[in-house]
Length: 211
Image (cartoon, rainbow, N blue to C red):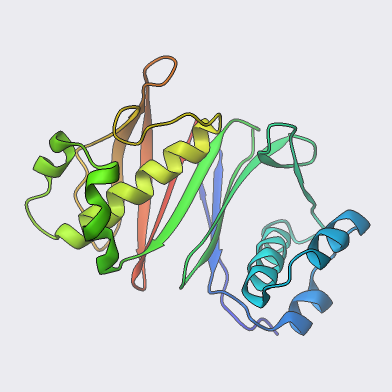
């Protein structure tokens, strides 16, 4: 019996799945197939929360595919499935463990954030004046949405060297409790615009973007 509900949705080439964090390590070890390399990696984690998150992620992937599925890492550090046949992005927050998979192997980024007031203190670090001017209501939720969208774009880009205020721009975002779609731009090497999607789950935001 699952200790938590798993939600799985398909959006075009993207699969998005999430669940609440699982802190029952015995359940996770009994119900997740790990290869030798993965088991060795698990032993390097001393913090219980890190072990739970790592195991829950692998358990969640195997719920999506209903079979033993291994996450490996490309030489650039990006996680992948089946040697790059599919791309995967991973995120954790207080309330959620989330994954987003691109079935074609193209880049994908996911981020989940619990809506908390601390975001108000650091908004100048990631939000441009143009973006702040878009926020006329629901400041806490909209700033959380903006931050999470930029985190997802950052993960999709995956090459580092990104200034959140300079190279990432989010357009026409406006928090809605049902979720929604807006656009974002990465302008590090060339200027590319992406469709960003999000869901509002419990008190958290789940945001993903795919090539």
